[in-house]
Length: 300
Image (cartoon, rainbow, N blue to C red; front, side, top):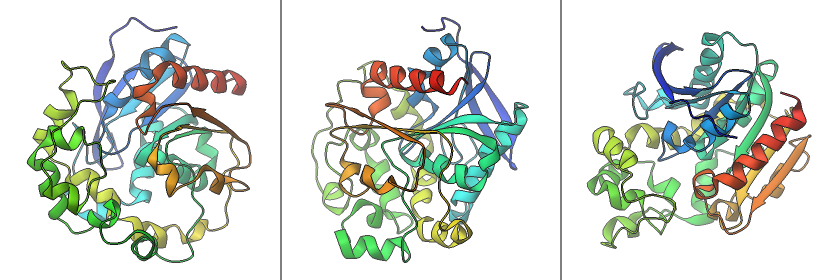
């Protein structure tokens, strides 16, 4: 089912910042959290499907993105600040609980489930699984495993990746190889993925206006997040959970699904054959089917 009604857009004050929220439908809330470099628009196929099935679907531009506030300080993008935004949004709509769905960096919903278990009815992660706490600050472990050219390591120095990603926004958004020093020095031609229509300029126009710094600052808090969440060490995700990934998603090479075993205690896994990282946009029919089946099973 789909909802033919137009998606509503509004701005709400949440946790001291302004959040732009796209919303459709009435019923139990499902909050959809995008990743990098994305926007609320990443959920354009899920909003009408959820609304048509009787849910209130909300997709914010997370802090640092799109029409939401873009704080200046790197420290404003830690996981506790982002999850507090989501709880404030839940308070604003007057609900005690929601099902939280997160893709890529939107996978902060796993941490939300640990930090605020009473507010999270269920969790749906896409592409990025729940990862148990690392034995040491993660950035040094990444350097040892994958070197200085690994994209997350390359992102760390303020200004460098920001400048290179913004130099040719369309090339950045359609890159077929991982961002990093080699990619930045190259001049490969952008190739539009099949799921992105030629007429669709939403991402390009937005990032040409905002740049990429807000999203990059999430990566620059990785070690700080490790320190801030020390009190959650050993906690498990007890809520009903669904993980959806594409069989060709490169994230699985360094964040394997198997890492969740024993840590997410009520877990279902759906692998969309042939899909890559942008699974909810590449294969919306498969993702919507899995998502609605899970919500039906919950009785939400």
